[in-house]
Amino acid sequence: RMLVACSLLPSSSNNYRSSSLPPYSKLVFLTTAMMPLFRFLIGIALVSTSSLLSNVAVVEASNFSKAHAHTGKVEPFSPGDPKIKLDGKATSILKAGKPYQTQVQSGDGGRGLVIQDVDAPTHVVWDRILDFDNYGSMVPKCFESKNYKIIDHKPTKANNFLEKEIFTRMKVGFTMLKLEYFVRHFVYIQHHKALTWTLDYTKES
Picture 1: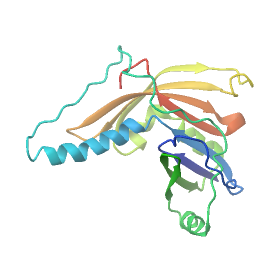
Picture 2: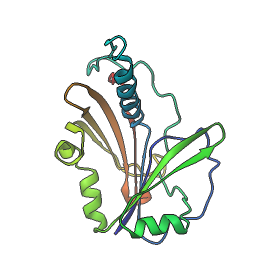
Picture 3: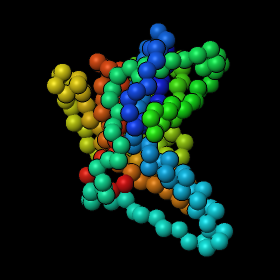
């Protein structure tokens, strides 16, 4: 089985310290690339409210051939054990088969954290997570997902044991409101048991 830790929003510093995860096979599933999705969902609420008044919304289009407006607003996550402490409440939630959700504050920032205990072999969980080409049939509200580039690396200490980069074009949303963004995944399974990702800033999401 695997204990999957997904950190949704990065903190502004790395001062958070606690004990390690329980002795399950561990997967660190960290991201800054999901931030556009959260802004998109927040935007849905704002558009729904403002449309009652003006029925007007401004949406910026994605562009595969144009670079993003910036190259990142926050520091990307580093792979490795997130050193998360699970108290009795968290353990009880996980034993009940439910995801444990919390928030971690650090300095003037913070992040949302979701942990799920998956009752399946480690290799099966990794196969599902890395099957980006089929997210459209597996992930709710994701109606299209396709890799457009894969770069294999020789894991070394110099590259922090990076094995592979996977670039994926994803489309999420609803019938009348959709978001397209381009993700650059960094695979560190062998050494760190981790996957991190950011936007692919060579594309406009």
